[in-house]
Image (cartoon, rainbow, N blue to C red; front, side, top):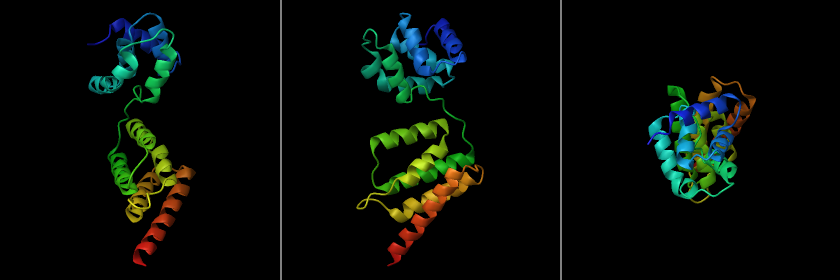
Length: 192
């Protein structure tokens, strides 16, 4: 069920005035609108595809939207934003998709990942913030017993080389140097 066009128009107007998606949700919900149509209207105003909106809202409906409590509109909006419900999917280039493939190989080679880290990576992949994803993975380490350090660091080195070819961010270059060093150490450990 789509929200009323007036809700989408109100959400677009509020967002155009500089409001965050969370505060836009809270404002519209405080006007007496039900949580699900309100969240859907904010997502539509952000031009998130309807199928993606439906999937995201289905995932959090029972916990956040089914039984609204009075005066929790701001908290609900912040939670929806933190969960990535309002993340606008980026259009990724073939190179960016290849970088994400290397990230996924690295994640598998970690041998396990904390749920919060995985959630953050998924959000960065969705929004195209590959620099944040790379820096996050470069600062992590494969697990000692279940990880594959050689594959982990090699995958990140390849991803970093692709990223630095188009992005001069010095943080990326420093992280790439770190990944190269770690890959060389992992290769040396494997051969001894």
